[in-house]
Length: 176
Image (tube, rainbow, N blue to C red; front, side, top):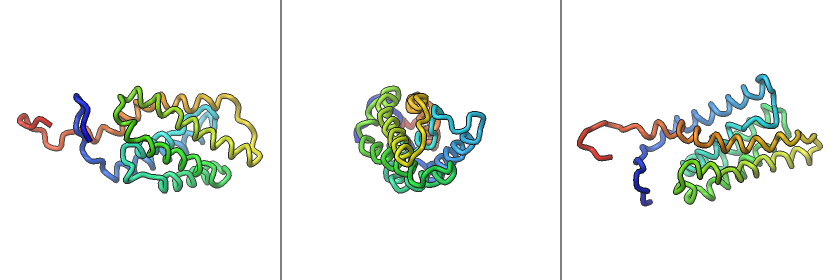
């Protein structure tokens, strides 16, 4: 793949860092659900955000299977209908993998605008499964969650790409 001018060549992603960030996002989601607001409809889904990030940047390592397993974990933790989050995370991961080659050519703020429909689709799937199972409508505050997730995209991009941007062996004579 041809690199765009002005972009730094990244180191390979450490698999332990990838899986550690996913587990950390799962734990943050669990803490967020038990926190002050509980399971508020407007709260962003940090695990979905990190899943989309790694599905775009490392589709060989994080795919639909990992999204399904993490979705089952979230379903069990929240006491939701088994498969609700698993279905939305798998669709989210599939859509992220489908657009990952095109998305990486854009700058990060533009990427945030382009992943917004993915987050809207994931929340719509989870909402429709909840409503079909007889759950109540959480309110229109639910529309804020995908917006907040797309606004967090640049922050997550900077944080999760930090370990790959460091130089392996700094040298004054090495251009890369």
